[in-house]
Length: 225
Image (tube, rainbow, N blue to C red):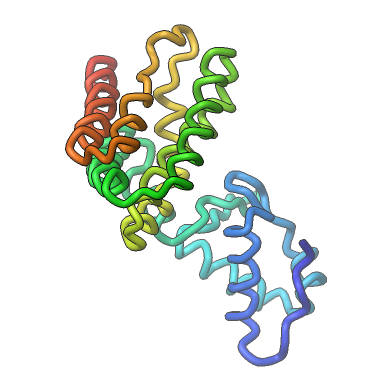
């Protein structure tokens, strides 16, 4: 999706919004280098200083990372996610603890408020996740597992909780990647009991299931540490 030429007023703000849209919309994925400055200047129809100010602002917000001599890379898709990355860094335990806090309540609320459509979508993602696990397609497993957890919290139908968790998506994906056991598929925790609890509208059981597998991951991490 090409960037539109900006209007004259509020150029920096307009450039920031267009660049943010390219990030949040997936045009510039996390980890990818964004177009070089001359290309952005041409695409946006603004001066170098305007582009630099926009990049500086998005870097301060945590969405971009400027690597001297290497370029500017997408670091996160939202200010919340950027803040989480700054606070947690690569500390897996921190991420798992935050996930446990949000996912336990998300699962509890999902069991209470999920719709039939929610349930069907969760089931489809879990089937895809388990199929990837059976076939040892580890990259697909990470993506489907991440999507399952994000959707589960969305099924709480608590907009604030869902937005907070959405901001953690990159950190959640990274924690799943770090805990994927590629040498022993049988060692993976099943999410079927969790989905069953949500299906049965059993809020307490859903909360226990959500907290249980995260506790197990925390214990494994502690043993390895």
